[in-house]
Image (cartoon, rainbow, N blue to C red; front, side, top):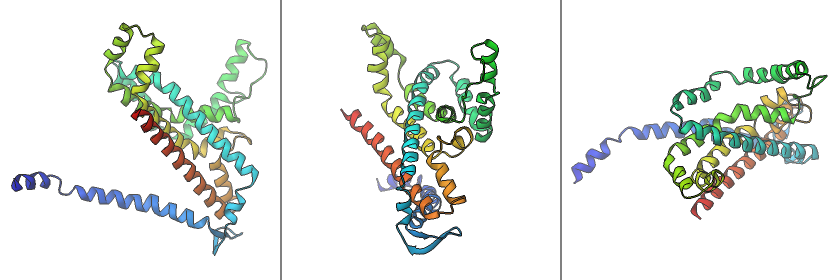
Length: 286
């Protein structure tokens, strides 16, 4: 018996090195930077840039400004809308992919945008939505409009480009959840008298609840901290918290306030993620 256990455990020798490597990576590139940011948020501002190593709560007092609260609210709202729209689009796409005989090719098409630099893709949307862009030129030629419509440099453009950018993050976990299901359960529900709508809400959605939670988290986390999208396609009333952090670091040279905003943003993200994860588990337990 002991010999058999020794043989089995010997197969796993060396794997602890991978765990140690992961812990070192996590320590160096996540925990230590977070600790530094938290520490900077409690230090005194140096008006030349950087910080003075004196304890101060001015960084948190600075971000209690009403304008920052508006930016925080706008950031959370746009992130929630982008996540919800991404999931609404991703569910039918993932369902089609899961049961298509061409799913490998279609999955490749979903992943291909990751091979292109995100800045190039954002600039492509500027070319499409701009005042002299493809959409405006097309609508003018068809006679639907006489002058250009402002599709860009507003919240609409920010949400649209965020959905486009992070939609694959929603499709992939939903595809994984739906692919595990047998198509026969939907056919059985229809045979028992369920309409397509009832089958969708009472059969499909309950079985992919965990996939929906994962999709939401995968979209919400990068969306809430995004910088490039609102910077390039947003207007003055579309700036998100990532843009304010960059401004405080580079222009205002207020590092403690930037660190304080980053700390609050991290806390909001963690709370939102935990809420959706544990909320989903409670609903699943019922």
